[in-house]
Image (cartoon, rainbow, N blue to C red; front, top):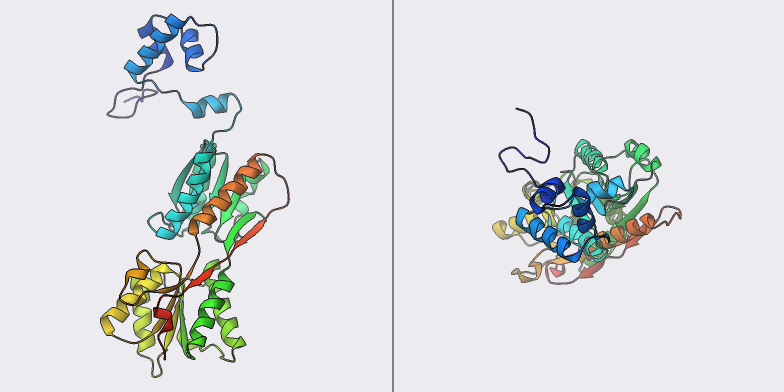
Length: 343
């Protein structure tokens, strides 16, 4: 069966300007002038056209119109890892605040930490002529974007720098956040401090691990490889990693969790086992302060990452051609109880 323009399979066709003109008994040019708020149409005729538009449910295709006239689409493409994760949904919210204030719209999609999926999403967004891209990178090599960048597409990376290209990026102070977490545990008297993190190839994991190791070394505590667990991507894997650590001949007395999903897994193990373990997590948790032992965390406003990146992208689209920027946002320790458990 042939596909009729303006029709989706199983649905009624969308009304066109020609439909409005026929129903109102006016010319197509008259409808175009009314829709585009151009002069030259009598008030009575314009009222008839407006009533007909309302009756038919006609909607102007602003994107197609903008492209025909060489104007911007008013769209940002946002590629994040997983919109269901509170961290990434907060980033999306920050982006939305900026686009809404500027009369624009952000379209978000999840890469699921898959470099090929990220590449496909970038292609799809570019085909739809978004004004610019905001990307939490999953790929390690972003040279595939060079043709789009040369053609004028603007991009700002979020939370992690791009691979093998120079571009704007808004980051957290991951090393500094790990430092204050580990320093806090050392100050409580802990000497065997474990680290559980995501895949080591992820920038944020690598930076938090670097901060963990540097802080231990500065305190005269060489990192013990048996206390480090990497490749932990979700709460279930975190549970398994923590059980391994607790089964060591000399288990840790404290643990630094590399992200919020890992912290959830640690909390589950502690609740089931009754094991006494000091805990500081990177990323705050919803209702983290309401637990029996509230969670001490390295915190920040994730929405600030989205706001900062969206504002920077808007500046680039407005003509800012200064060299690529690397913006680093601060973190802070929120002391609640779990990180203050003594050895």
